[in-house]
Structure formats: structure tokens, C-alpha cells
Image 1 (tube, rainbow, N blue to C red):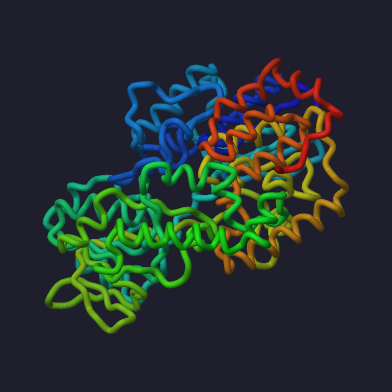
Image 2 (cartoon, rainbow, N blue to C red):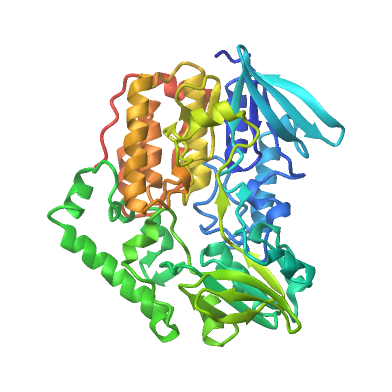
Length: 504
């Protein structure tokens, strides 16, 4: 492709905005479509639930060349995150690229690129592009279980909905609330509503380990998840020298470290006293995500303001003379005026034709993307943000540079057969290590830094050795990657042919 080719991006979240900025700097005319009235994706006001906060601190959750405002708190909330992304749009003059309140309802491949049908306030229109970037997010399609008795529950006045549709904590004042799930969003919502609801119940099919934001001096959430040493404690597909030691002759050292953290977390959050110790080892915290302790959640459980039913599911929704409620798999019936399902999302691209969708996924619905970006065999198409991570802004930004290098010819990927083989190996490895909980192949957690390294090697860009060394012991700094954008890609040209060293 040349810089005159038109690029359409579906989604104005973190990944879509990063792509728009980077590809625009490369000279590509870019249009960004999003069905919501604001930018932000998961941070959009249309999806912001009470208690929503970033998992990371403001020092790690930002783009390399656009830090968080200095007056922000250590951990930004949902409104501040959306404001930050809105500021990123203004800072990079992306406003003219945005088509908000505009949904892509169909995308058909044609010889010259893609023919799009888009729907806005004026109706359905046609548009076209030479290259399509799908940045609709791996958390775009809310998943709500199909509960028996749901219709009767609603007719009797009960409310049932997904966490992304729950925006006003005052709506549950003096009501009985059941939150389904035990992930970050479930615990955030439960803690927020427990201060105003008549009762708050969490129904958790499976308890998972959660890491407090701060554990002890020198050990916190970011040091575990955003350093090379912390990441090395979890077994990657290909091991560097230190990783080979930690998972070989030094495995007892690695196990002792994780066991110590497990015991510290258990005591810090009083899991034994509350009867909430998860089954399995602490290392399972990193199956496909790393869950963070919601501030105040376990305090509210201890105070009796939140009741947690572990190892339980809802088998039926109830409606009768005594009001509405839910029946649990344990046999207990619980009063429920409002049921909030923090039950995750499904990864779908509904606007693509069935033929193209079959090309993108396997029989289990897993996305077959080389480097989480490039579908093999579908021309003029890339994905953005399908490398979901704990440092998603930085991973998305580097992926945008990878895509720019691909489109401008600076990156020559392996042969299609080699890419397919690598995708097969990666999906098999992910399925084995996560027991199938890998978000249909779109999650790279806890291997965010490995993902960065792989993309940087592909485009022949390397960090200074001192920076890589510091990342072993200190959380990664997005500003360390600011040089990627120097000269609108010229920095990458000058490093072609440079051999990038393997991981230490």
C-alpha cells in the first residue's frame, strides 16, 4: 500500500485511536467509525458502570508520547480515562478523522479493498476503503446468560442486565441486588452498590486469585505484572535464559516466590476468615487476565454488607407472591430486585460476511491472527486491540506501528504457511495453559512485555540495553517507547537489518 490508500478503522477505543494517529502520521487518509457518541471504547460514558477504575496507575496506563495529566489521582476512574482519551484526540488533531454515532453494519471485501455500509442519524450510507482495521474491542459484545424464568422475572418487576448497561448507583438504593461474577467489574459494582442497596449478593461460579494494588513495600501489582522478572515467573511459549532457569533448575525458587505471595495475599485480604480462599495455586491468577482486588470489597464482605456465594450459579429466576429472586445451584433461593451480570463479553465481528468470519476463526471461535494482528488469507485487513493486556495502551500503540510497517512495506511477514503454523502452535499453547480461558485467542496477559518484544523484533526496533535491564526490576515505562514515532517511521527504516538480541 502507498500513503494515498484510504484506511477505515472500526472502533474509537484505545487501539483504534492509536492506529488512527500512527497511520495518519504515515500519510494514510484515515476514518474512524464508532457507534457511540464519544471516544473511549470500554471507557465510553455509554458503558461506564459505578466504581469503574483503571487497573493500572496513571504512570503505566498511557500512550508513550502522551502522559496522564499530572493532577490525576494515582488510579484514574472511568470519567478521567475517557477525558484522557478525548485529550489524546485533541492533542493529535484526530477530531476530523472521527465518525461518531456511526455504526458499521456491513463490510464486504471487493477487489480494491472494502465496501462498507454505515448507519448514522441520517440513515444507512455506503463508504469504501482500501484497508480495513477492526478495533471493535475484545470486550464489545456483552454476554448475558439465558436464565430460565427471565421473562417472568422481568414481568414481575425484576431487572436483569449486563454490567456495561449499569450506570447509576442510585438506581439500586434500598433494593436487593445480585451481582453475577467474580472478576474486577463484578467486585467493583458490588462494592459500589453495597453502600446504598438493601442487600448485595455476589454469585461466583469460580473464585479466582486477586492481587492487592499494594501488598508490601517493594512488591505491588505492577511489579508483579509489568516487570520482566514478574512476567518470567509465568511460563511463556518460548523461554529466555532467566525463564529457563525459573522453570527448570530454579523452579523451587520460582514456586517459593509465588507461594509467599499467595500467603501474603491470603492474610492481607482475610480470605481464610471470610471463607473465600480460591482453589488452586496463586499462579492461576495469570491464566488469561490478572485480577486486581477492588478497594473495600473484602471490608464490605467482612462487615456483612456483601454476601458471596462461592462455587454457585443461578439455575432459575423466580417471580411470585413474595417478590422476585434467584434460585442457586446450591439449592438456596435469594431475594433479588436487580440482577447485574458481570459475565464477560463475546468476541464477535458481526458486520463481516459469514465467509470472511469463517476465514478468521477456527471451529471453536478462536481468532486466528498472526501477532494478534494479521489474519492469514484475508487481504487488506488487520486487527487492533486483539492483544488485550495489562498495559493495553502501549501494546496497542506498538501494534499500530507494526501495522504501519506492514502497510508501507517495511515489514515482510513470514510465508502464509509459516504464519498459519505459528498461529496453530500459539492457540494450542494458550488453550493448554489457560484451560480454554483465553478470550478466543485475543488475550496475551500476563505476557504483555513478550508481546511488545515480538512486535519490535519484527520491525527491527530495539530498546537501549539499559532500558531492557531496568525493566527486569522496575515496572515498564511507556515513555521508553516514544522513539517509535520519531520521523513518522523513519526511525524504523534506519534500523532495518539490525539484529535484535533475544530475551535475556
